Image 1 (tube, rainbow, N blue to C red):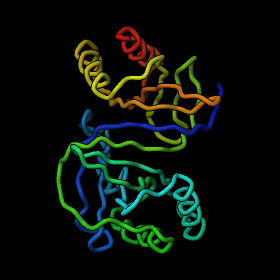
Image 2: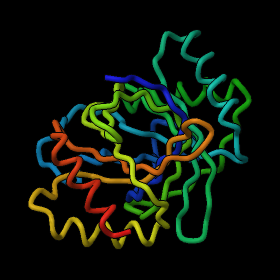
Image 3: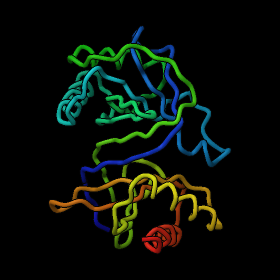
Length: 229
């Protein structure tokens, strides 16, 4: 099996909340829920954040986020993953740093302080709950090819990617997803769209989250999108 490290982007739609404690006072921090929770009743009860976004005053380059995160990890014996992200809520666009690898909510304030000490400026605090948002995340992908055009994440459990041959606008993707899921026997998976940068070009992908997904199921989902092009 071929293993690769790629740069790319994922676009997800989630209902998000703001954190009102365990953060630097008067700063804007978003909690992105575990995608499993929308589809499964059996999930961990450990108080561990899955994905946290520090909303920043201005955009920070992907390079800067990677450099700062690497320095924080080395100096504090952490294993954080930082990514550049943009959060769209209706017509608003927020800039942020998406962080994974935080073990407890109580650790967020200290980690935020590490980023602040490196010159990251945070936006002023806001409050909302269960608010629909579109999140665009620029990040690295460590993957293993299971079959032609089908991959498994090497760093995230139960995360898979399949290639599709055509770009979909978000509204198209939502429409296709609604139609496809309504005609699937197994609807218990989470799906998002994105891209890999490969060989100087863009490859369109779908990200599928499903515990122990079989290749046959991944191929069925892939083919159903292809059939709609």
